[in-house]
Length: 393
Image 1 (cartoon, rainbow, N blue to C red):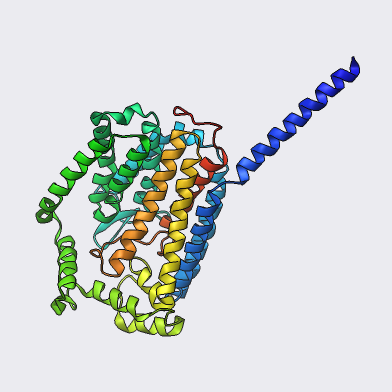
Image 2 (image 1 turned 180 degrees about the vertical axis):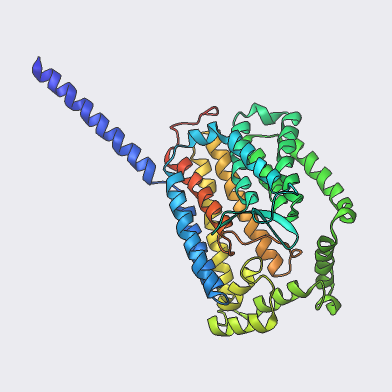
């Protein structure tokens, strides 16, 4: 009898060890490592590109990278269930920060205006930009809402998600920051498709937006209309605007082409950028610095890293096991990839010049730290995926 009991206990211990082994493998063997590796590659490329003209800022960016990775290691170790549970609370707090920076009587020592925009909260050594974090908290809130497919099967359900999305979009546009606000629409479309929304509902809304979009031109601010006018002039070959509203775009395109296939190298690229007086070379226009220094090959390397990030995020979503995890992953992947697409396209003259930065690459502590925290959320979803597929998990 004792022998039978001992054998039963031994089998139980072996099953427990096998379960522990499978759990450990699930935690450490998953697709989220691909976005992590891509994020690190983009971050290091950004530091090297910034160092082309601003070595001191490159050192600060490296410090921001360390902070971002430390925060990411903490967030990535958490379970995604608490993120779903607290998603709406985090979104509401983040939205409150967006309202706070717009309050006119808040002193400049707390909300630091730059170029007429109120986007940053002074935290001493780091300026916190709520519009960067709202991208993540919005994705979490939308995923928590849309995780039951029935929510978005109806047209009123789709319209409800659009109404909620207009809250951060409107607050960001009041800063003003139209460029960041434009990221939410396409990301919402991808998330709705992944959640099972009806294509005809989305087609109706998309067609309505496309028809009404040209009507917004008269209400745009002058500098926003100038950017569109500059792109049109560049397309038709009108060089009269190159010393005016088209200066930044013209300089960016010129320097991007100057790198050729393999690049001009650090010293020559730095000289070209200096004498061409490229505005915002370490932030909005850093893709021009990359292609000038490393050429077409450098630009392709950035694109491949971005594609790897998005692919890894979508694979995390495919294998998440829950609708919440799927929506979080595709929302993050589409948001980051779209931002890189718009930034690089404007640099080479395919889109109007905007104030949109290159994710992980452009200088900015708030942006870099938030992006690493966002990547950590992907890691948390991938390392604790459910067995099977649970819509309500």
